Length: 127
Image (cartoon, rainbow, N blue to C red; front, top):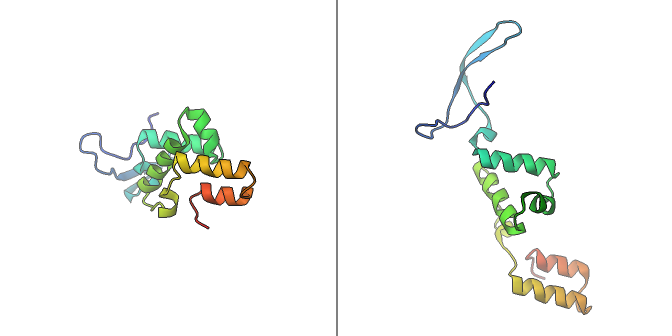
């Protein structure tokens, strides 16, 4: 059996299901049926979603599993979110620079800030 594809291999437009068939009772339904949002995803994006589920949504585990940097994994997740028709919060888009990360970790190490404060700063949330 072949997997259902969501985009036309010729023109890249959305495909539409027009016939459903039950092999058990020989019933057939004809009409216009939606494939669902996940058929909007490319094969690579769908593989990413499967990895996301297998890793229980933990981006750190995905980073190790895919052998990618954390920002790359996060960006791919944002691409999937957009492909599914959702918007990514601008707050989530903000990333902390490597220099800021080092400053925060140094401040935490020296006891200048608490772990909670460090976490807020590393998430890009100002105090």
